[in-house]
Image 1: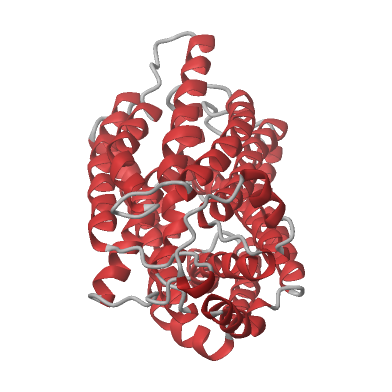
Image 2: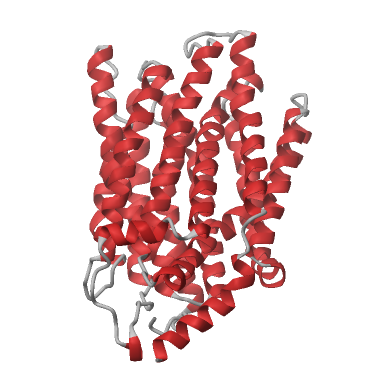
Length: 456
């Protein structure tokens, strides 16, 4: 390990620059989670069931591409490091692919439209998003090995990711309305968002620095690439990586179902689709404000305990929402509780993933930032794909019809299941998994042992 692993220049600026990467990623991720299925069903007139199936099948390809990209990151050698070069190379293709995603030719017949959806969805999720998100996810562990600094970087990541989510949730529908509220308006909207994403990624590239490297005896840098099979075997000897990957898969399944159901919940249960910006806006603003206090909580109680607190608050917030009876005041209270809960969870989750890299190196002797993060990405994208398919399937079973003026009672029930009850189930599963996570208590000893090995 290279011991010059603490942030040294312009700490606040570098933390902010690092967070900008997830702001850029969330331009597309939030759009895909919150609005893509709605765009397909209500503007491009594509079957929810067919689209959900495409999303689920595509995640298989997506997961394979994640692993490939992780290996590529671990074997990248450049003056900019392992991860940063890919952020620079892929930022413009990222913006272009997002525009194509929301450009389904509305006049085409059903089958050609589904082919277009399959191609563009895979271009975005399987190729472009993977090629920029996997390196970005590895960047935290490459910037510093200090556990507190990692937590702070994770806080900035989640802070800016939430800002990206807030941007999409707040401005997407108003921009679509401004540009004409038709299929072409969505394309124009994502041209605007594409330029914003490029600027965010460039800020990450120019404002961060990679410092951490694996090392052998006497501090010599390990230049040999870890064989792929050896790296995979090492992953499955890493119990904490398995826990976090399972946690991420469940969370992103939930994010996909809940996020995609938000616009349906606002439109068909609350009666106004524009309430999406109100519900999510309050939730995101509270989450952003909460981020400024999370570092103090992490320092005192540890990442795992703060994460657990977030899960409990998320469950409480969802239950409050379910029994709100449509009262806007209670919906606001629910959004506040969930915002604090998400601040706790989002600010610690990625730092916990980075910590599993050091545990894996200590346990197996293999340090593979790219493979660890890409395998995590594989897990959560599989969860995301299942979630997308599950959302479409539940809406289809419930009898949801995008063009109907009034939905049936079964359709409304299916929306509530997706928006409220699936998230509660996932949070409960998270509490069970965290019962077995003890890395916070072990981490200082692991780092001390790794340093001792490097000096032999």
